[in-house]
Length: 138
Image (spheres, rainbow, N blue to C red):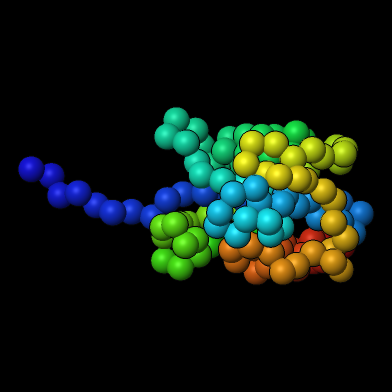
């Protein structure tokens, strides 16, 4: 008999910064219902993390972009109240258009970086790390 391992869930988050704004979604369901968050979600069994971030972005905002640069890998038993998760966060590139909330996002919007926060989960930390990466590239 094989031992059963309890592993953290794998998620992917999109950080799309454009002209001093960041793309956010308002969560439509618990946890953190009603709070703003980065678009993202759970990686499905038959997809890569990169495919998952593109899919989640499209489902939650109606927009298409590609992963451009890795922001970081975020892990810990308390990141998500539902279960331990590990998230891979990417800076995204694409044509910034008007988003529309979809899937489990009640709304989607471009929000001024100055007004972004507090965010759900540990997305404030992810956004802070992404902003540092973008600032270094200038």
